[in-house]
Length: 252
Image 1 (cartoon, one colour):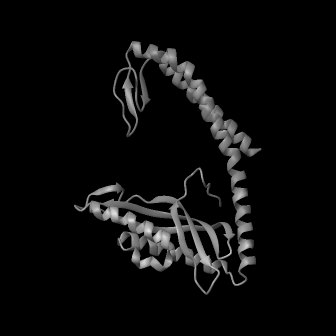
Image 2 (cartoon, helix red, strand yellow):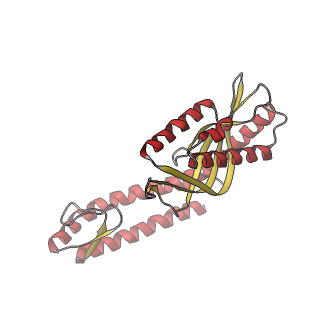
Image 3 (tube, rainbow, N blue to C red):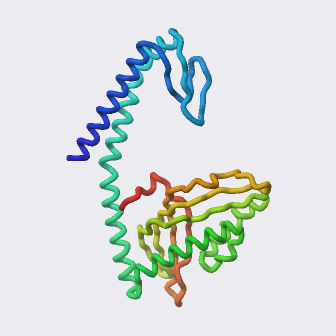
């Protein structure tokens, strides 16, 4: 019930905002936007204010009141859907995580969740340090051969450009087991690791060519680990990428 009222409140707020925009367009004045097809230039980096003449005000009155309600209701519909889908997605992901944890415990009676979390964090940090040092050989025994070769080839492109990547985790905020699977020869798990990360790249002259030096990003990473059923081999990282928003929704 609270979610329904929250969605209703957002819709009402958008409607009030829309009415204010129409009122401004009716009396003439200024309009805010990223670009304009009628008079003036555009801006991709922020909001540009356009001071309209009487003709451009007429344009706003003529077209703004017709297209704005459509955009308004589309936005309201998407927001409402997000409110209703988010709790359901969280419940589903939590349920899948519990199932994966139970499966892992059944497959490996010696499994300890605390040890797994420690291993995941250690490998994650070490891989980042090796990446920043441009020497993946430091973690060759922590990655599968396929991922190791991929990282080596990616670093080679940086070397050719004489660029140096820098990535450092300020804090790991969560480690979640998402799924578990096994084949005849190995176990495989998918982990979502959430962290606060600084990520940028410097040129040979020390200039920032990618990212920002002081900006701390909040990121979710999709990490897949494999472990052979033979011998006493530990978990090895097999996939490392940022988890896109449409692939995964954070849950508490």
